Image (cartoon, rainbow, N blue to C red; front, side, top):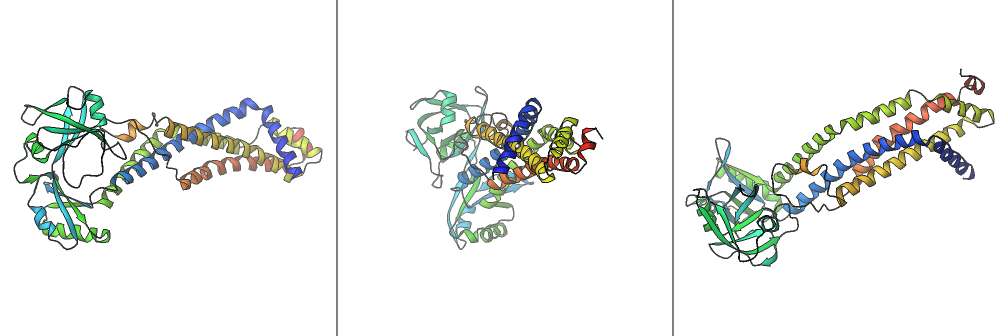
Length: 386
């Protein structure tokens, strides 16, 4: 142990003598790891948030397709679906999107129904009748709204529609409630001019989660023009979207990967004349080849581990403390009205270990292998520049 500590002490002093070069290496190394780790941490956190948000979501969403596109579905289909074995409550929904040109924001408007996910009222109460609405905190902030104020929207006929704000709510994740406005079903039907007997989609409750695919298949057979979407399919879609966007961000940061690759290649192709002279002197005064390799291994470990920990720390601060301001605009998507992300620190240790393996091991190899070649060379030849 004493021998190892002495070698480590000499390694630190050797690194200190070339502090500017090693500082540059650590800076590039840390930036590369921080860039990659930020994308991985943010993507994994958003996936976990999506899973938590959808945990209370419907087991099956039944949509009607016309010409391969989403169309209004007859609300009477709910009665036939409810008769299927294993099916619980079946609820037609009316909802849609609204663009507010005055504030240049997009809202999601949903008709109140019995299967709403849990909402926490911040102020006031839930909408109870026509002419009332309950809004998410993001809508209230944008509109500078208070309880009792009138919310003015333009309906599908171009006529102003006012409703009294009865309350403001939030949920476990404000990603889906921030831009949400709740109307009564009948009021929203008139707002969107939805014909009587039609709904946007139908949500289905299944008693046994293992029977969800079977029930979805039965619904498809019962109504061939529909597309039953299960909760697992929705989760898979979110994961695919985040994976695609994270891949796009990794492509953007390809320059940092290239810089790191050039750095590792430069280390692998050889060591400087000064380092060769140092190895020759150490060999001449009695150091063994194993001691030289231990020295270079220690130097590489100090640089790589320091850079890795610094990069992971910077990524953690960027994502979970600052809200990932450099990445979120790309990963969030197209919508305008978004809450300030309160990302929960979900860390996938498998990703961290994989990132460490793919960055630390190559650098260590590129440090030790050239040193081994010099360590087995005659010290006199090295000091003469041979």
